Image (cartoon, protein in one colour):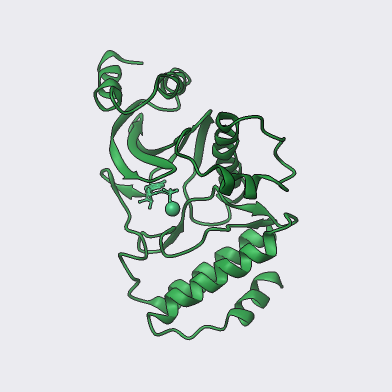
Length: 232
Ligand SMILES: Nc1ncnc2c1ncn2[C@@H]1O[C@H](COP(=O)(O)OP(=O)(O)O)[C@@H](O)[C@H]1O
Ligand SMILES: [Mg+2]
């Protein structure tokens, strides 16, 4: 890593990251998956998202908290997912969780608009940045579409395309859809394969959330009809 870059990284990371996360960031930088971290985009209970660069390309860096994580919730989604082994401790579970989001993005990113996965290492995931100049595209919740009907149809199309790839998002709502002129799906850590024991329940909930949000915009959509379309 360049000297100047190291400085940038240190500037925002000194008091923010634990030693292990800092080492992971250096590891990613050494592997040319991350050049620069510039600032924070979002801070949540379970993860923070940062804006940065890989060369000239803008990237988003999602860092999962080891300690604050809602352990039980994660277990709910990992258990029954045949892609992942049993875990032994909290740290291991959080690493699996990050890997799960990465793998989920790998599975669908060519099918639907979402961040392109770039790398995952321990509790850090690097992906393409949705937005420009360090400003993330707004959430649908804060930026309702001008053409709600078209947006809804597009999103239903995305759910169908993902389902065809054997995948259910599992945490879909106006908080996890960005409005970049077109809808872009994010936050794939809860996503499960179609054969997961909770897949149907999660798909039902995704569609319900979607219909509820769009009914607030005056679009009366039928949940059952949409589910039928997705499963067809
Ligand atoms: N690839 C990305 N590009 C730009 N902004 C992002 C990206 N991923 C996440 N964000 C921003 O970070 C916020 C939180 O990310 P998200 O994946 O939803 O995590 P969580 O909801 O678990 O905190 C999003 O609402 C969005 O503002
Ligand atoms: Mg989210």
